[in-house]
Image (tube, rainbow, N blue to C red; front, side, top):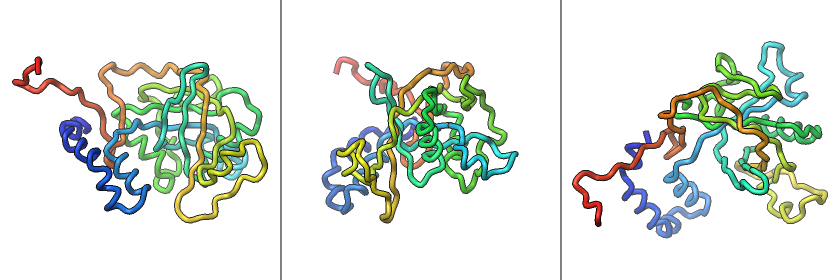
Length: 241
């Protein structure tokens, strides 16, 4: 739980203050950034969508028509003039393929639902992050459907229906970001992991099944799932200091 981790605020502060020293020892910017972000709690979300037509035709009749993925990066980036959120997906990815297919179809309705997970959904986050272990993550998992027929995971803090505002941005090809709309997106042929950035407009905040006000969010911190804890006043401390 994050309660024990956040109690060691001074330790986290020391890590931050020594980041320049970490940079010298680690050797690469990527390693330094990973080390820094491990000290920062991130919200956990699962994006759900319909499988693209090609993928759905390749699976059996008993297979779920939906696909889901746990997001390792999710953020709200604007409220005005449009409510916008963003996230990245590793490629190749069935979810990336499904969302790209939905956007390319010209569908102006919601393409996906982003479910903000609660503290009780660590197992749900694992289900949608390990397709090798959970090939059918929707099996025995309760959910309701939006009016567009997209899954809202039961037990979530809340959910939002979204539609992509543009094609995904290939983060492995930074040069293409300066040439939006032009031909010639480079395919990823290097080693390691490549990602694509998705920007979506929130079309509706879904009315998730009622949960207790005391339920806290699920967070990812130091390579594990945790939750929040109120920072109380230290006993015997001088409030005037």
